[in-house]
Length: 328
Image 1 (cartoon, rainbow, N blue to C red):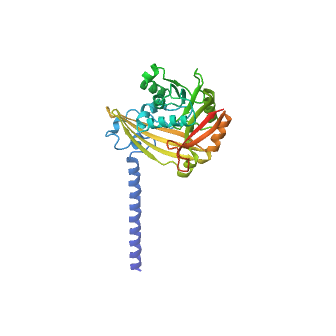
Image 2 (cartoon, rainbow, N blue to C red):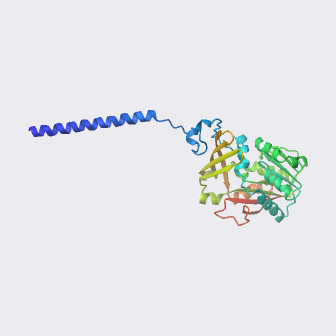
């Protein structure tokens, strides 16, 4: 009986120790939770890359926008400042030559052109260099138009280029019809709603001459559904700025839409101050039958489609496709 009592006492003491240890663990976890810095989903320090700047206190200027940048506008002011830097490796010269050759292939005239969604005007300037007598560019972003005018002043003064701030779905410029209308770099894919697409195509029909060409490129539906957009990181640098952009995408297959979510870190190299911005670019991907219907309903006939720049037949690995239509 005494032996049994001793064993019970040992078990009781052991259980007490376990309870005390458990209580101490809970206390330590609670203390640690309150002492550790709180994480915030919108915290710049959490979001910023560790090698972007040595001093987080220099994260002085912050612009955080989770609202989509769409056909209706958005945080374009900041976007226009680093736009050219992000796309400085883009083959604008090759693309301009490609467009000119495509126009000639389908007997388009090289007189005047209207570019819907001209950005900072690089394509427009190069189209003039490749034989167009005059190119007019319109863009929704006032910042983009400011950059275009600043970079191409000699072409503006010689009347070879002009730029206007205008919505591509409701262009209001006093111009005669153009020989060609262009909408490059996936501008049409920024038109998310059916009405947006139709409105842009109506503007193209309004401003192009009968028999004139309408050229545009889009995200190609079969490829988006087959491969699906992946996360991408891009680093660019100039003498003034260092830019890192992270792109993560959300696919909405029932809506023919992708939300490209950008996180952008822009460092001013002279001060070390970093600007952090979040942007969402809704992009629509298209299938050939629907585009043919949109074109026909706005006064165009479908002429041709091909892989952007290569001229190959579009397939399930073709992200960008160029479409050519003629005004009826």
